Amino acid sequence: MIFDTHAHYDDEVFNEDRDKLLKSIKNNGVDFIVNVGASMDSTKKALELAKKYSFIYAAIGVHPSETEGLCEQDMQWLKEQVSNKKVVAIGEIGLDYYWPEPDQSIQKKWFERQLSLASEVKLPIVIHSRDAAKDTLDILKGWQKELHGGVIHCFSYTKEIAREYLNMDYYFGIGGVLTFKNARKLIEAVEYIPIERILLETDCPYLAPEPYRGKRNQSDYIDFVAQKLSEIKGLKKEEVLMCTMENAREFYRIDQ
Figure: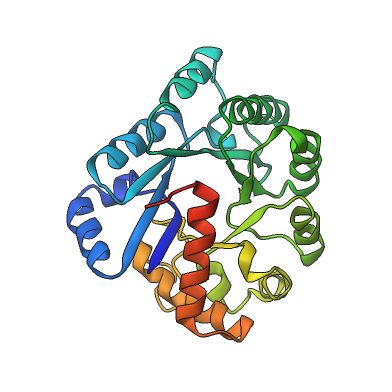
């Protein structure tokens, strides 16, 4: 009973065994996966995966680190893909100030342009925010009345920032980092965030949980994240998986 709400199976590290792996994790209790676009190219690959596998859905969008060189024609193409019923969100979009490029002004321009797209097509958003807490929050507050739900992917900020997003009815993407020994700040935030607002994710192939930290991540490893979350929340692991499954299906509007 696993819903991996944020994965990147289009990544080249899966090229040698992608089909075999996806079939195996489906047999290991993974019911749904949302493969998330990070560039125009990876968005196209996400759509291909959603077409090929019944249990995979797609989020379409451009990661802030890939916004250099975007144009309105790209936005129009993204808009046209929304007619595909397997497209469930706009993302991952946002701000990433960890690296000096692209320039912050470019990132902000295309972040807001993709927020405009999400507003127009009435889809929820998947937000990437790294070392950009204030700017991300300020921009999303400005768009709050225009949007149709959102998740802060790989949430890594403080409990105080979590409170701001809870007040805006956002969800929080929680993955393998929760199991790391240095995850004190995240654990404090997760203690505060209601279970009804948590989505489980891998961000695979990245951020594998303990005991696989440093290795290639995959969707069935969410079981380890669910176990840690159950300990934090004082719930059975099965309750965590059931609740986060319901959260994810509600967020992505998947009825089946």
